[in-house]
Length: 218
Image (cartoon, rainbow, N blue to C red):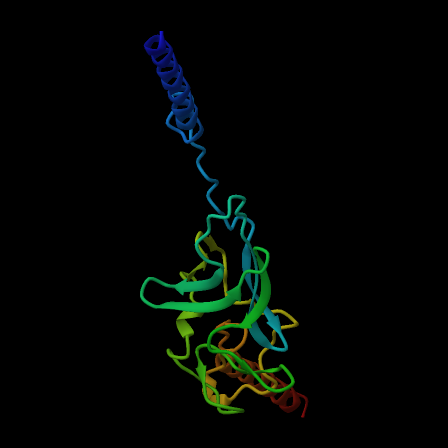
């Protein structure tokens, strides 16, 4: 009788342990009905970077938002990478705060004075009234084949171009004669000297016509 009782207890214990193991397997993903959930991949969708002019100086304005519902991003430092296929420049923008970062930085090669007015521009060298074009000083960043990518982890390619000529982004007050008439800030290659020569020819022709008429009347 005693042996039968002990056997019954042993069988009951085995049944209990077996049920607990099955339940544990189901809870940890070992069961046949468990489907692991794939974390949502973080994205920078909606983030932007654009070229703007402030105080006759070119700036890059940026707004970065990271959507990361499952908190799987491995970093929060934001970088802007510019490349034309030959040159590459990485610019540190700062760290995301609550998955957001906004601000502006000077365009590479640009500089401003204490009042915030432009005193240097990419593709130009010299100071004051002695600015001359150069292939250095990040001139390549003004090209039409430059791509821009915002990187955190993930990354996002964004459209970015050097700011165009506007009333808020004019050339410096005085453009040096040795600059061949190219406007530093706007990036427009406007040949000022040929225009001036053409205007002078028109004026000379007009003066000759006036003198001819005077001789006829005399």
